[in-house]
Amino acid sequence: MLDRARELVNIDTVLADAEFVNAETCSYIKHSGCDYIKRKGATETVKETVAEFEGRADWDSNWTLQGSGRVKTHDTTLVAVEKDFRSVPEPKRGDDDNSPDITLDDFVETKDPGEDDLGPKQVTLERMTEESHEDGENIDYFCMITSKDVDRVGIDPDEKPIGHDPEGSAWGIGRLYRDRWGVETSFRDKKNQFEAKTRSRDLGYRRFLWMMQNLLYNGWVMLNSAVSDQSPARDDDEIVVKQASYLDELDKRVLSGLSLDIEFPDQEFG
Image (cartoon, rainbow, N blue to C red; front, side, top):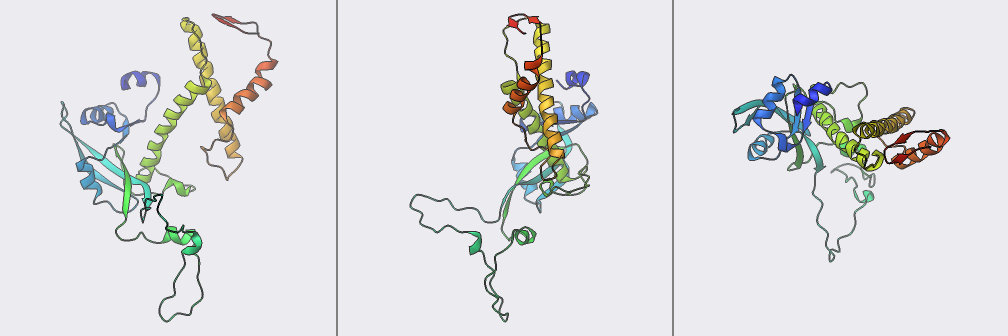
């Protein structure tokens, strides 16, 4: 599959789920001149390694993937980034739970001995994020293996760093792997919203519809990117124009004004 894909497009990094993790395929990807980032499940070996990790992102550049086929071992890098942080797990609330709801106003500072009582002060969100994590916290890590070089933690992309190069960082590996979900989402969107339905067996006609599907989808992506660029408050991947609205406007403003006299199998235009 990799060889066929490389005949059609240039591949720099292969992104894959945990089911594609084995020493043989990882070695072959490297042999082909590509890098890889793959999700790694929570095996006992992974758990033992991650137990020694510190902070919200960490890595082990001397991690060995065990194989059972022709390739017995494969040296790689295990990267872990924080998936969901809770310093204190939320209690499960039942129907008979009469515990009071807690609001931000309930989190107040208490004076230290010998200090004047300045009254309660609400803990700000900035202070909460800057304070060190409490002892005994459990960080839920998202683990990956990669052939890319990792030499630093980097900056969490959720902090939206400006002018920051994520290459070679643990957070950068996580951000790159995150693009994999964008690929799956685009395939789903094309199939459900942009794909033309036909019963024709004419391969040329079906290929034409496939090309139109991709052109329409790419136009929608470019429109959202252009709108996001005009507003610094928006994220680059934020959806501004809905797919249905885009197709409706395209139909009203463009297609309805065309005078077409084209015939395709089982379809009529004009």
